[in-house]
Length: 461
Image (cartoon, rainbow, N blue to C red; front, side, top):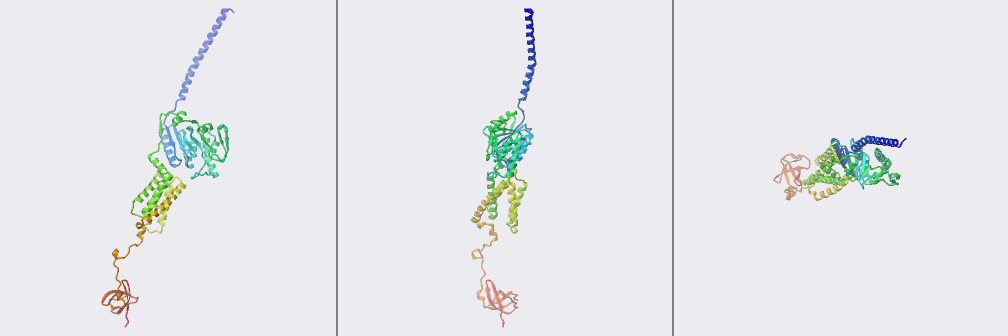
């Protein structure tokens, strides 16, 4: 082939290559643009109401009722996400179970944002959420069972039950259940260096935010709940924070164990003092008000129902009736039982109620005794004791004993059966015989004078 033919063939090859490249570019540019457009749509945050509900107190039925209200409001508003902002030392296991079930069964996606501690029962609530995001420096775990004094519970059945609950909640969202078991059971030994978790016997697992992220117990770390919301693809344009109502805040204060004990003390002391030493008014009013606050706080918190008010009122009425109606103590006993039953049923814990009631009753007894001694002259017991003296100073004039009549003679002017009237030494007087019958106009003699009682007998001729 000639040199010109070679140049022509090269030109044709170059043109073909250029055309091919151009066609490839024209084909893939629209696809790339479409892919880019599709990626932009996928990365757009999901819009809609996001509800942030604080879990920032001890876990008990008051918190449960508050969370139920928050979840209900979220459903009514059409929320697309619920964020539980957790910072709690734990609390009642039974209540945590119910809250965990509510979180787990929610139709709205849930996020547990741990801003402080998700300790004990708080970790169980967090594990039931779809996503866990932690604030730097926060903690999850340390979920061993303890009693009301803070002492560890070592009952194998209780520990096994709680451990199974924690493991089930962890496995729910693909987290290693053995780590959750190590948060509850101090007897376990765990060595998972790949997850950064090592536990010797006698220890309880508690994970920091960094440790939790490595172990798969946190999905992300964020400084704020808003940052956490953005990190999982939701918009922060429509955030609602669920706050406690005034009644709920007051209830939270009134159901504090110390405040409950003080209210019971004032209630018992005030009512009993008013009943035993009437006339003041203030102790009775303060006592009834303290009981009303006690029952109100527990009612708003969801601990007490209408039956507790009924028990309290019945108990109070029966105690009052006992003071005026002779029932040989039956009304007083029934009233006391009714009052105690109302107090115990109103509290969130039977044990806590008895403990508070015992302290309040002991303190009230001391105060009642002191008041009763200081104001003994005003006590209700004075109504049943005769304290008046039959003296001239009080206006009483004693009957003069007619001692001089002893031995005096006279005559009966009415039949003496055994009492009647006679004339003795010319004086008409009322007399009685020694027990026998003396007819009319018969001679008599005075044999005895006892105050106003003059005793005579017939004189036999």
